[in-house]
Length: 315
Image 1: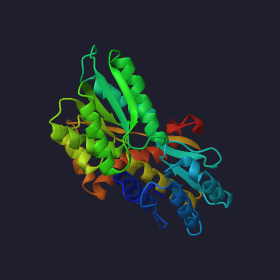
Image 2: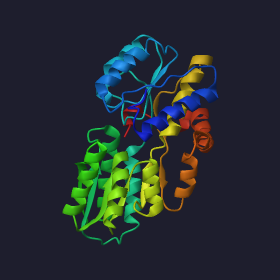
Image 3: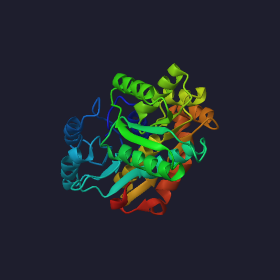
Image 4: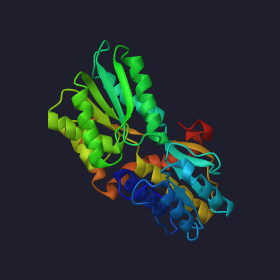
């Protein structure tokens, strides 16, 4: 079950889930989710899914606390359930496995990429925005960004994370206002996918000199990197996370293979001018994405213990 059916990252995760389950074999898959970020609707859909998907369910939570109760009910009925992305597992959900990035570290990675493009004695402002504040994954990215920027660029004033809004038009208008009101900014950085799309657009519109980057593999974000309007975008590799979840659940259903327990740490990817053409090719088809993900899928499923951390350390 995805966070929504409208965003590129959620579609990637669903495609990955189907691909991973197909590779494992022996099961039928169904993917669903609310049209937009709607935790109550997702909880309703999860209850319905539990009447059909007795072999196992993977849940990418819009708001972990809103789906904790239905997740616990599903597990109480004896249906295997794992969390895929979402930033954290809410207390009381009963989930014992989460497949997720180290989002704090991804934020630090983008901060390092930013600092490498600026003199260490830089002054001015860096503005951080988040299109979904209070979502654990994005909050952790923003925290990693802030703390690492303070280490690498101590004379720079770091502002935010500011709420840039989930809705695409409102998000665009917010970034336009932030660019206009922070004329001395040396970088505008986003924690989410809509941020990446609109930062690229605002940078192009203003022919800006400030640096821009965010988190997305949306085609518009990748084109932004290729055109030089984003110096980088970070991929949370949602296709891979979905594929790992689909494979593990399928093998558990057909062969009784035990599901790992803990936080299964999935890698992220920094996309820059040096590799953007390769990633655009990778993203051009589901078969290309699967071919690229297969070595990491095999590693994460063959030796999951090497990539496990305690669930309460998810960040």
